[in-house]
Every structure is written in C-alpha cells, then in structure tokens.
Image (cartoon, rainbow, N blue to C red; front, top):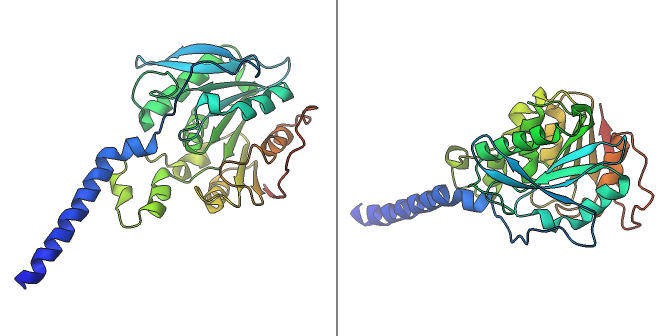
Length: 282
C-alpha cells in the first residue's frame, strides 16, 4: 500500500502545482497585449488618436473616426491580442460606409495604463461610451464586440442605451472556452474573469446581431447560437459557412452589419470572398 501511496501522492502534488500555475498565470493567458507603435497607418482612414480617462484613474488610448452626417458610430471592443493597429482592414471597411467608430486599447494594452481584469475592462467600456455619448446621441451608437470583446460589449449593452448590439464570434463565457481546452482543470472554480454573457444577455434591450463562422476552431459556433437563443427579440443570427475565427471581416461581415442597421452597402466594398450564410431571425 505504501508503494502505491507514494506515486499517487506525487501525481496529486504535480496536479496541484499545475492548478496553482494556472491560477496565478491566468490573466497572462487571457490578456495578451501585442506590440503597439501608437499611430494609425498613414494611408488609412483619418483616425484621431484620443485620450479617455477612467473613473479609477487610468488613461486609455482611443482611436476615433467621426461618422459622416446621419450615420451611426460603432463602439468597437477588440479580441485577445488583436490591438488597434492590427485592424486596418476593419477600419477601412467601416470608413468606406461613412460610419464612424471608436475603439480603445484596454487597460494594459495599446499604450493604455493599468493592468487588465474583467472589472477593469468593464470600467474601460463605460468610460469609452461616456466619452462617445458626449459627441454622438445614444440612438446612433452601435456596441460591437469581437471575440474577447463580446463579453465586454454584452455587459455594456445591459447598462447603456444603444441602437444595436453586434457580436462577432462570441462566447457564452470565457470559463466555457477554458473548459474545452483544459477539461482536467476545475476552471469554473479557478477563473477570476469569466465574462458570463450567457447569464446576462437576456437583459439587453436593443436589437442584437450575432455573426459566427462555422469553421471557428477557437469559439464554437454553437456558443453563438446559445447566446442567440437566450437573447430577447429582435435578434438575428448569421452563420457564415466555412469562415473561421479570424476571417469574418474578410468574408463579408459588414455586409450583414449594414443590412441589419438598415444602411446601404458601401460603394467601395471590396470584391473578395463572400461566405454563404444561414440566417435565423426572431
């Protein structure tokens, strides 16, 4: 019995060490700020670099493009590791439509001060909205989240008025994603930042558009469908056939966004691949 107890004890010790490493490094794994030069591309849209102060004393870097008259403004929340300057194609597509946008570097990202956390990112989102609403009425603000940013966007949409909520490749919660990658870890007990969109999306009162690729290997399309089922109407779920986690913008995402918002397609829309789609609507 003693011979058996020693190996089992070693296995348990190693497991506990792994659990401890996961717990203490979890925010480094979840938040992955990339390199940031600080300036928009010279040949891109005329983006303004702005500073936004949060109520807890942080200073956020924001990129802002005012809309053309009569057009809405997207308040965009980015994904994991996808900083402001890595979204050049997205910014161009938005600008081509005449739509404005504001996107921020989360605290600890893209030149913004502070350390990221779920509570901190929600504070950043509210500060960005409050900055934008001084320049754009709430009925012209579209809250738009991609990947990690969908959890930020859903929470904000439960707290602030908006024309619509757009969720691009959303998850039900970050703990649900982690449980797929680490089924042998009690991640739902360990994770500090869970962004439980599935628990609060039914509080969103504005129209909701969810777009997800069937080829997404990072966040399964089933999680987007779950959020759709939990959300209040009016709502629309667009499944883009074959698109993966990183190709929705390229594959025609904004065609569906503009249509959902009742806007005409941009005259300068690129002629690249357009994914076949399955649309569900309530």
